[in-house]
Every structure is written in structure tokens, then in C-alpha cells.
Image 1 (cartoon, one colour):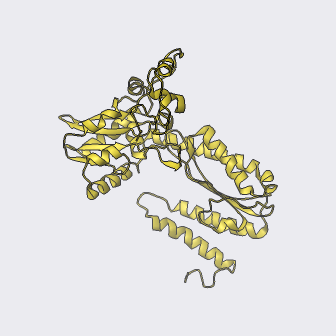
Image 2 (cartoon, helix red, strand yellow):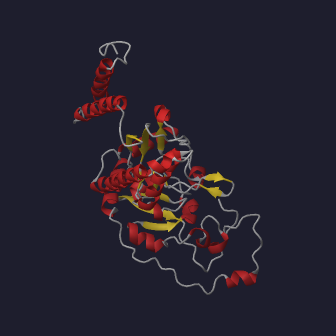
Image 3 (tube, one colour):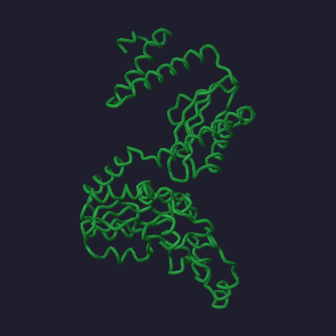
Length: 372
């Protein structure tokens, strides 16, 4: 939380009256051009209706989460909670730390309410005194009205949240994401766990908006893989060549998306045998293979997840090709087993059968494929 009303910290110098008055004047307008209703609005409306029906008569609270400290006065880049984004449609560039989405029960089901920290206009000391929210520090945010226009929700000041939650109502909420919410409401582990499960399961079936966003993530990730291949030669000339490859993908993620979907695995040579190698500080040598697992997260917070094993010099050795093709055939067998009603174990077993028979043929298995 901020140290004072204007966001200044205990160690900040006092603000002389003359300076405070001067800082309010002479600024050019900073309009946000081109605000149009989000294409997610009709899909969000359907999602909210489902959530309202599930929790009829109960208040539902979905915080966006807050800033997380990386070190000292440096925070990690903010990433809103997935459930908050799903039920508001708010994308990365518009997501404000400490925002809270509430479904308030009424006679018609629920009223969707969004509580945000709106822009700190330049006639306020927060504009230049608040290192976390001030526009002079972190840039322009939308006003309440601009947010309503873009996302089709009723929007209120997050400073009013404490008072709003003062009346006791049956409530379910995501805990651990907002200090005000956690302080005002009693802990109910069972209700929280049930809500978290529901919020995950409702997102299993994707609407057309989500599918399109996921395709954007896949396309951007595919281009990121091409970027990485283009720096293979440079990577072989660098002591920590894996990081050259990692950096190439990160550039694509930031140019086309919001962020990495997860830490990139760029595992060359023996590192490819480590399941989650994210140190990426190894050498890259001609003749080795590199396993890359990477994904771009787009502005809507949907991410891709692509894994490929590639020869650094562009050609597989005979032994590398044999193993690679075996894994490829196992993958195809798994894909062929995917159908409505299939279980994960059916898909896994289809792949395992191909792997076992292939490894037996190569003389790698110490027992028969049937026994294994």
C-alpha cells in the first residue's frame, strides 16, 4: 500500500507549496485516442451470466492482484489474475494493479462492478509523487469513463472498495490477491477452493474469441522459433550461446505479445535431458541438438506452448535422426488417439507403445517392449 495519500514514501522530501502549484500547470492534454469497445464484450457477457447463475444470491469477488516486489523498490511487470481477465476482458496494457471485479447480487441476478485505480491526472500530487501509480512514473491510465466505454462495465474507484464491502453478504472470493478484500472477509478455505476449481473448469471450453487469441499466440510463437533458428550460428560463437537463442525469442514475445508465457527452455546438448532447464547458460555446439520449449503470451493473456528439437548445424546425424523419428512417430500415434471420450491415459499409452517398440528395435530397452 502507499505510504501517504498522494503516494509519496516516508523518505521522499517534503513538497513545497510553490512546487506543488507549479506541477499542476502548463501540461499539454494527454487524450487516449481511438478508444473503441473491446471485441471481447459479448463473450464476457456470456461468461458473467454463467458465473452469476452458478453463484446466485452470493457476492463474487475476483481481484486482479497487485504488484510483486522483485528486489528493493523494483517490482515485477504486472500480470493480472487470469480469472479477473477472463470475466472482464481487460488486456495487459489496460490492467491496473489492485483492481477488483465484483458480481453484486440483485433481483436480476448480479450487477457486474469493476473497481480500479483510475488515472492520476496532472492536477493532483499523485501524478508525480506516487512511484507506483503516478503518470509521471508509469504512464497514462484510463479514466473511469474511458474504461467503461472500452469494456462495457460499470466502473468505480478502488478507494471505495473498503466501504463497499462493509455490509455483510454471502460471499465467495479469490483469496491472497488483494489485502483489502482479505482483511474484510472471513477466511473460508472450502468456498475458496470450490471457486478456484470452478474458475479453472469454466475456461476449459473455449469460445471463438479465445480460439482466435490462442491462434495469435501460436502464430507469434512460430515466428519466434524462426527468430531463434536465425541466431544459431551466432550462438555457437558465444560462451553462453543458449542465452543468445533465449533472447531472440524474448524479443518476439515483447514485440508481438505481452510477455513470455513461461520461462523459455533453450537446452543444448546434454542440457536437453534436463526436464526444465531454464538457466540457459550453456554453450551451443555444431553437431549437437537443442531442445526449445517456448511460448508467447499475447495481450489478452493467452499463451502458446511449442517444443521442438533442432540440429544446431541444420542436419541430424544418423543416430539423432533415428531417435527423432521415433519420437515423431510416437507423437503421431498420440494425436491419432485423440477423439471425443478418450482419456489422457489412452493417448499416453498409444505414444508409449510406439516408443517401447522402437527402443526395443534399437537395442536400448533392457527388456522387451511388452514387458516395459
